[in-house]
Length: 397
Image (cartoon, rainbow, N blue to C red; front, top):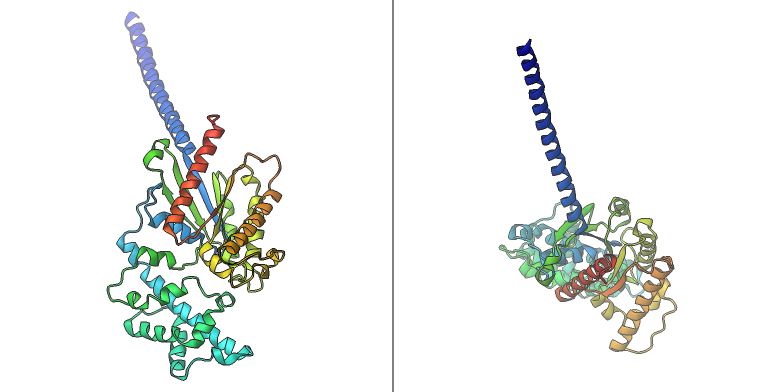
């Protein structure tokens, strides 16, 4: 009887011991899960989600490439390796063929429809070259740019009719990179050609879907532990439906507006002025409920093109700017025109922002997406603004 009692007690002790061990293991696992959740929560607090928005051709994807290509002093980025640079060869060559086709076909159209049509007619010796290059530009598979083809493109580019056509580029959807690539044809057609960072910045690939890069502050700001996630999305109308799922948890929206495009029409709708489309899109983004407390950084982009154009093409050709009155000439007029455009965007912002939302940060930056120094300075200002906002929300300012 006694032995049975001891045996029973032993079983109970054994079960109790196993139960204790299981409970300890379970508690350990729970503690580990809680620790990981806490770590992830802390890490999440340091992630700044930046959304790069804007209409098609606004230059936002060029800004995105700047952030990746350039080891910006403020931000750490690995940049593109040689393999990635080489992957742009076919894109750049395609851009060259597409551009010369637009110019050739545009000259034919203008020659048929304009009163002074003769100045858009190609010289006899270049007509066959033009047809050949237009045919290549219409293909889905472009050949590698050879020295012979580059010479033919250069000959056609220098034709007086093509230059006249180029001067009306705002009507023909001629890309901003046209002059750059046409002036570098011999280098682009070299057998051992490897694209430079500048070539990649000028390369035009229509953004589809969502592209993301991640970077962190360096130098004196490294201790903050902040991590930036920058998202670029397609700006054309058919791409915008993909934006919505990115709208949650955004620290700042960087909205890119190409201020040089006040006299141009949309690529996807040739009856719609690009600046009016940009205004409507800016209004729509500002009114999104999930952006009620989100910081807004407005990049008034392509200032380099704007300052050349505004002295030749009146700002009031755009319906939105019809009340603009020039006051001077040269640099003074450029600044006056820029401030007018800036004020128009400010008005839209305050019209679309509730009076109670005085805590929402709004900054405007003058940018040239192709200028490394300007982009570097701008991103530094964006970083400083976001860090100040974080300190303010934490009650430290």
